[in-house]
Image (cartoon, rainbow, N blue to C red; front, side):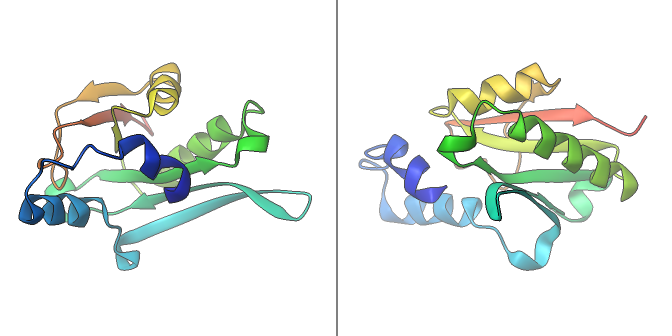
Length: 144
């Protein structure tokens, strides 16, 4: 995923001071201890899709965050991303969450289109992404 997405944002940080760039990098990092669930889609014995749920802690009680949604290029257009998202929603509801939130970037229009198609609504940028002005954040109420 990083190999595919990083070039889209090449140059975006060229004029950002190093301290701010480090803050942005930390905001995008995922601490494995915060992962509540991981979903893999397998086809012919190989992983073709991935997504995870992250618990952002007490400030986001009742919510889980969608992270690292990715489908390999040769499996796109087959419904895998929708299946991944549906499974995350199911797992989050089972865990007692009533809302999913997520962050993506402005250079990922296919991700934005997916989220909007499946019922996510735009929300303001939330912590820890506040330093990343090109974030696009979404939410969806689930389990009700």
